[in-house]
Image 1 (cartoon, rainbow, N blue to C red):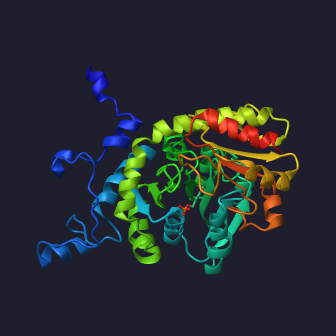
Image 2: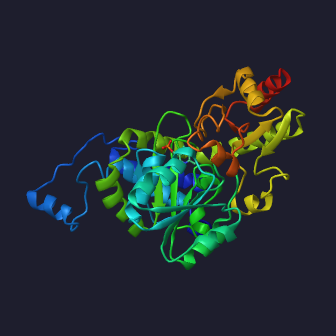
Image 3: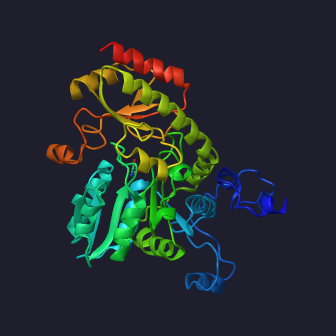
Length: 398
Ligand SMILES: *Cc1c(COP(=O)(O)O)cnc(C)c1O
């Protein structure tokens, strides 16, 4: 019995309980929402001491709030990091980190297949401030090694990558970037810590669009950053407080705390249903190609199995007849909903070339492996037979 009690608590137990004791809140089972912009100082001296960092306590809601703190402690634990910081959206999390660590003249190496607005942030926004951005194919780590130099301040990638699910070897990239002392930042939105923990493979910082699986119900926008206590302190006091001001509402923290409670459970079901959908699509005569990390035909099937505990809920595929057929197919769906975003209870489908990745130029998309006919499906939590029936009827109606 003693040995059992000494083992660390499991993922879902921490997602449900960590950092909150009802006894400290009049027995309330669920953490209260501290909907306050500012915090009263007991004395003038106490306030001054807090500002000097000599006394613990909450000062003002842009940087810290007690509802946020519970969520941050839980996310830090789930990702295996020392600390975490919430932000108003995934883009707010990413930009708060980058604005904290970058100076003009610094170089950043970014994988060439990432979420469209992150791509625009790196290639169109940061470049305006004298940051040099290199794109590379991170599935071939040697191309990253060729670009790493003494000015490389950060490397950034998603795995699995949005929208085509390419999987990147986190440990290998961390090894290459570590030689130059660059900060390795992984966007873990697609896998979530329920399936993959990049810090365990040597990454320095994890960022999330909490809008997706962490929230999980399509009712909020949010972002999270996880890293060392020192890094998070810097991002909070510089990136968040001075530069972006992109604070997450305590109400959204409450919704995210609720989402986290079922994260592991949901990802198991998303993965199982996506596997069934992937098999249907792979075997269908009208499907030209499919990319899903759980299929033996997936080019990085072994790497995905090593790095992720399950393949996740996203599938990318292309129909015979390319973009026109893909658009016609989307219009024939009735249960599956035409919408961007992902990780929700509802099954969602979208067309990256004209939607989430329209920030890429046509040639850039071709060069970066985002086909014009590619469709991205986020398999939801409806009964899998209903999802399969809807996809099947739409394919057969073409
Ligand atoms: C959606 C998304 C983002 C941006 O997050 P927002 O919450 O929409 O700002 C960043 N990275 C990935 C992988 C995403 O899917």
